[in-house]
Amino acid sequence: MKKDLTLVVLAAGMGSRFGGLKQIEPVGPNGEFIIDYSVYDAIKAGFNKVVFIIKEENYNVFKETIGKRIENKIAVEYVFQKISDVPEDVHIPKDRVKPLGTAHAIYAARDVVHENFAIINADDFYGTDAYMKAAQFLRNCEDNEYGNVAFQVGNTLTLNGEVKRGIIFASDGEIQEIVESSVKKYGDLCKARPLDGSEEFTIPDNQTVSMNLFCFTPKIFDYLKENISPFFQSHNDSNAEWLIPDIAVKSAAELNKRIKLIETNSKFYGMTYREDLESLKNGILSEIEKGVYKKDLWG
View (cartoon, rainbow, N blue to C red):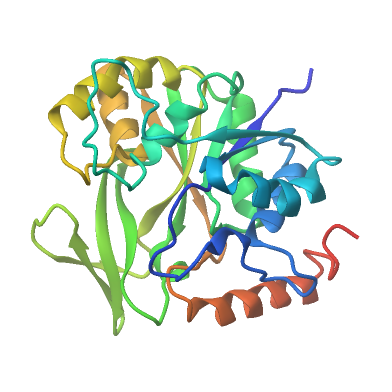
């Protein structure tokens, strides 16, 4: 029996450094968005539902652009990430504007995701191999396993500035720690500056990093429901973010779960800066020339 697999797309980010709603920036030769290629790759890998986590005010533009292109190809649902979507004992500062973080985004999907699922960022291009490996893991994983499709850091960098990457430290194919850092290439090495203020360190080009392509079973929702209140009660400032890497590592340790390191050699493209757009478009054209994608993706 074929197992249902869901792709959860995190699309509620504000895109401030890029300068606009980058999730619907045309990048393909026929006006395709990154999300188009992500959904196309996911369908090819065997995913049969996609859930978009968006801001409520962006619903119409999502529905009328990407939604209407894919709704006849895969089951689609929309979930709104709202600052007000917290338990009654959580008090978010009234001046809060920024979303509550990527873990909260997954929490927002608790009522519509009932099958094994992978999460991705809407504005990141992961490549076909990443989805194939995610689907393979999700078809065979146990309830005590998570997965992270990890990239070589050298395949994820931009020439236009520092980028945030989760530096992975693993043992025997299992992730032990993810250090969220600002990373930039310097010669043959990369410098990682941890976001928690700890000491800067260097990593080689082939160091594995997390790009938020995590694989979970629905059991993760039990942990999220139990831990959302404790987190925001102890992090009650206007900028605190509840993040997926943190809850993955923390819950794995507390619940005796393991996070499998799933390596891919795919080239990763992001749109942290507007100047990244040209290299992303060129990368997609290169994949089209190789026959990975059709020029008219949905044609």
